[in-house]
Image (tube, rainbow, N blue to C red; front, side):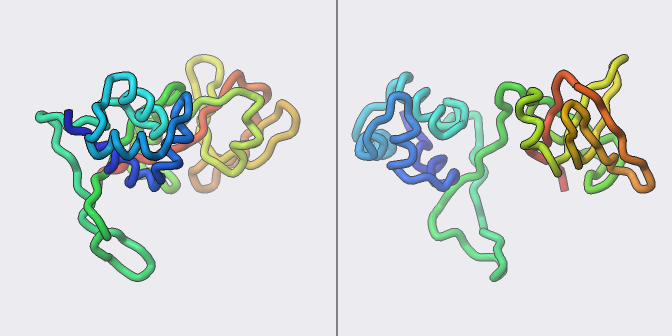
Length: 187
């Protein structure tokens, strides 16, 4: 089996030691290196352990004949555009548990028509970590609020809608909210 473990690990900017420590149970960097190079056979169990450590699907670690890789052609930085120091591939986004999406129908704030905003659902204990982030809040009657969480006072959340000239909204004790984590945009 031809794997992409090394490419994915490098794309995630992790060392062999990082991946070895993230495995459950932890293993050695040498073992990860042997699995990357093919000197040790990669079983389904190892593939699943390494995929969990890299936070990708196990299928992302295997070269499939019907799936084309997306090579990284250049790196954009403050010095301009440079060739990457070694070959690598882009890792496609994959949903994790608790992800919901908002499809942007018309441009508002920083978002453009056609964008998808992926959000991670969180419970009340995590609301403080969502301050100054864009959030989706459920309302009664299949309605929602979407805006920047700008304050929290006990069970009261203060949201600033994204549109210009709109006033702050206060929501009391929502059951959950979802924090924006990823923007999917076609250019």
